[in-house]
Image (cartoon, rainbow, N blue to C red; front, side, top):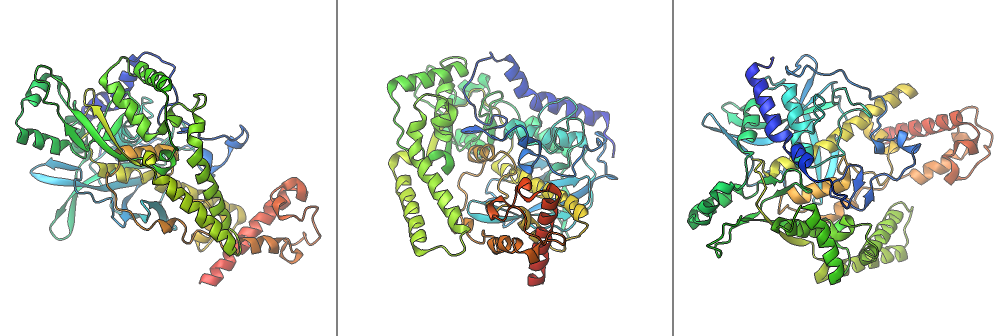
Length: 576
């Protein structure tokens, strides 16, 4: 399928009306020296994302560098590249918190097309790999991909405008960067600015047909729906009409907006979920904008910041920063102040303010001590009763601190609707979109494992055991991108009242058994590779990773490769 001139015109309109809207607003704003903002590139809420040395940043998955990845040839933007790409449907199991009461629905040709997830298009076939698992809301989800016949009603240009970084004009895509503000997310190989992303994604709006059939809505209609629903939330010319509207009509309008993600282009944060839309009818002589009410739950990493009591002088200083940021003493500026103060904590917004960090140290210190001690016990061969009791006391102390009235996670934010735009997207799209980075990292990791298999000239029969051998016990497939960016977006735009599972899922089946025994065995001459029967210069376990202590980097590489092969073979024999 090749794009027609009419389709090209639709893409240009989508790019002009939606993709570049925030960029134009930011270009017209005064250049202030702002404090640390939400979702800054290469930054977390409390400082830089990476504190590694310049040398260490040149390698490692943490820095987005995957072995074996190279620049991919660009796809033909005006076709679906059916002869080059492989199509997979992404599914989530269990569907809890992903099947919402108010899904995103597109009405077309007298039918309802309901959002059901995303399709993934890969440049290479995906073999059978270990299941990608992630824990959200204390529930373990499995992200599955099922190969299907290639759909026809789309072009790569449309997918780039919606879900991928647009390398044509160096502009951000609409969903991941403009709405969800995942500014550190990149599907390309490291330092690749011209090539094609490793994967492409397409939203799936479908309706059921007889005999278990299914019709997928074309990207033309999806883009047209987003354009038609991308206007102002409250039209300024209709303020009087909204103020005088009967209550039942206003309620119908508010119910239509409830649960939708709205955006304020150029602001930080720019998007949030509408939980309630209130109007003030007490001022009959003035036309005021309705208020967007957002009920949120702060992430635990940001909420329990201690007993925060600001002096009047400090409050005025912080408010002055936000008023300058919002270009004038407006009601919206105070709304943004409450939004930032509630969601990120003042420490993340004004991390450099002298004396402010001490206000946040109490809970954060207790939390860090608890996490470190819990991790220590998880890797002990046989934790003692006294250690278990000590961990329980630390957990009880955290629970007591959480119950204090000044440390509640539930927050209510009210912001003026002036300047906000509709998106037509409900929170179910956000829930599914936030799992895509997790799956992409999982696939890229196992793509790098292919390189390892070529190096050692051995094909592992059980890839999960290989993944277990190459990852640290603390490794989790949680977010796939900057974790604080993902938490902020899920809090602002995700589902309002998720169902939670058992919190013990975080501590179950997380320990790698046999790791300490393997280290001891490797220090035994009988377990060394042939030619290393003599005692090396270093026999301490904590120095086994230093090549200079053993004498040769090549010997160390051989030793580590032998370690992984013995581990995987032994586990495979035990589990087969």
